[in-house]
Amino acid sequence: MNQTAEKAASPHVPTLARGQDRRTDQRPDQTDWRINPRSYEFIGATFDPLTPVQTLSRAKWMTAEHGFRFLVTPNVDHLVRVSKEPDVFNPLYAASWLSVCDSRILELLAKFSGIPLKAVPGSDLTQQLFDNVITADDTITVIGADVEIIETVKLLYGLDKINHYEPPFGLRHKPTEVAKTAEYIAANPARYVFICVGSPQQEMVAKACLDRGDCVGLGLCVGASLDFLSGRTKRAPKWMQKARIEWLHRLASEPKRLWKRYLLDGPKIFWLWAKWSMSRS
Image (cartoon, rainbow, N blue to C red; front, side):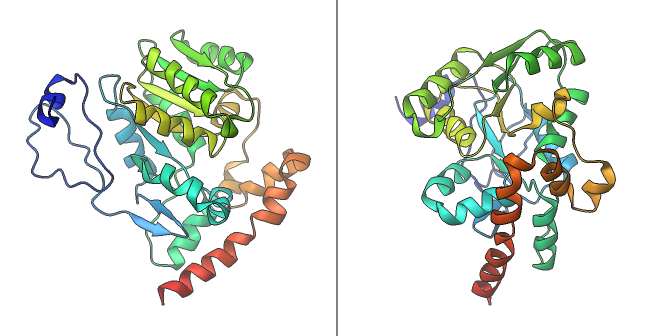
């Protein structure tokens, strides 16, 4: 079957490559949320310069009638690990539909560099979707979290159409399990797929879904967002978020688990930013 015939046979709105110009396409019956014609490379990752409202608008546009695509939310921790393992992370981010900045620290460094990135925390986006977009008629899928979190979210939002799958730990080094997770997503079509198994595992699952070609909806690689949404983990007060010290609240809340991330690995972002800035000169 040739490419034209494949497009005609597919019932879903197709996914297009990052940066592909669709302005000449005739799409009279569809809202045209084209890929941003301009993305920015910043400290080793690609970002789309969207505001929180613009990101939510694109997510709201997605339905279960759309071919699968996914959104990633790189933060400081991710970029530090990208610098160590570019061969692992870069293909995953390159395959994303949207890549938005999940860090107010990165937002500030980007501003110093003349790059118009706005912080779009995955936790905020997740809450906005549940508060203002997802209805009782929508089917969603959650990969990760646990039964208690799922039941809490169902109760909070009056939802009962939640597909839930818990892959095993160590997913990164278990390609068979990644494939099995993607198979579950394909077998349980949903408008939104919240992939909450940490990075790069969640991006690996999303990429596997994209590669299959038979998944639908929007995959959101949003880490611990459902922990916050359910109330299991408390977010920092708004003033701390605005002051760009939410990391300090998280460190104080879970020092044994997060001390290395925030005290040893996190500060490396300033050296990476300086090195990146010098490479531009």
